[in-house]
Image (cartoon, rainbow, N blue to C red):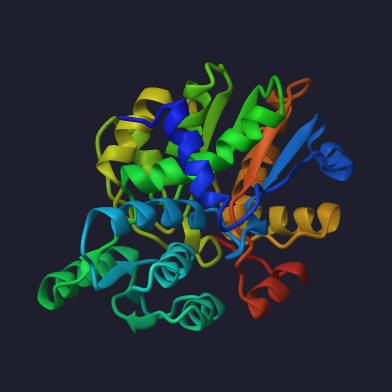
Length: 323
């Protein structure tokens, strides 16, 4: 069940004890690129550079008041792990985070700087998540999931901010990793009684959610993206799928090449840094440019945590062909 307006507003007060609301800007050069009015929600402006912090703050506020927990563990590609790190530190809890081998060097460094004990295991997020679950049982740690109603409620605060400020938003593009971001958008839209069209965005090189959306049943798919690690999902979350099937208008697949171009456009037009998942919504909007004329459009820049060397390659025009 999605949170209602009262629950989202209560979550916002927890979030704002750590950070202010993030801005949403209508950048003129982006409007020129898209050929219509476009508003960008800047979740790259949170203290960890991504929207995930909101969910962690709300989850841990409830965890601390409901249970005696000495340590926590979770799995991540980076942004969720930073969220866990910040929230665990605020509540005096030790945190262990499992990441897949070859994970972002700078996201790993950011998690360690927050006091997280980092464990590298497995070839992808799903393998890391399964290993974290095993360690939680063996070591009697609280397993912080990557998808949970409290995480969703916290994340929904970003969508409440955007939809409350930008009136008559016709379409909003939201990246899908495991699903909390898009479910949070749907929750806020429904809580406000709006009719905004919600469009999900996935990597064409991690198409599990797109395949599941079409089939109307859970479908796994291999992950080969080298740029959009925040959307590198092999196995969809069943609870998120139920919400997506019911409330998402469509899902757009974007290639790594399209994501790279969107990262360049964002930097050129706004001088903001977007990681792959953060640029994917703009990539999808550019792909659908012809259908958006005359519509007020929103794109969620969900995070800006991209490694410097990789970003340099993107800005330098490197080709990111599908593998």
